[in-house]
Length: 79
Image (cartoon, rainbow, N blue to C red; front, side, top):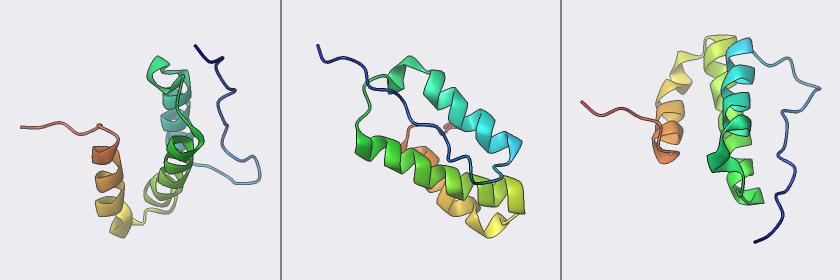
């Protein structure tokens, strides 16, 4: 089994909304992300940007993209 790599953090040169930081940290602390590769983490980083648009800038036009990305990550609830 390969050793776990250090999980990335959000870039510090950005003023991330509290909700985005909490969302990202939930992924970092989840065991399911222990063996993610660089491509998976890049997708999460890109999704964090969309998340920040919605929660930090109130860009509700980005909600559809955020929903699509969260669904792709397995984070939607079915009726």
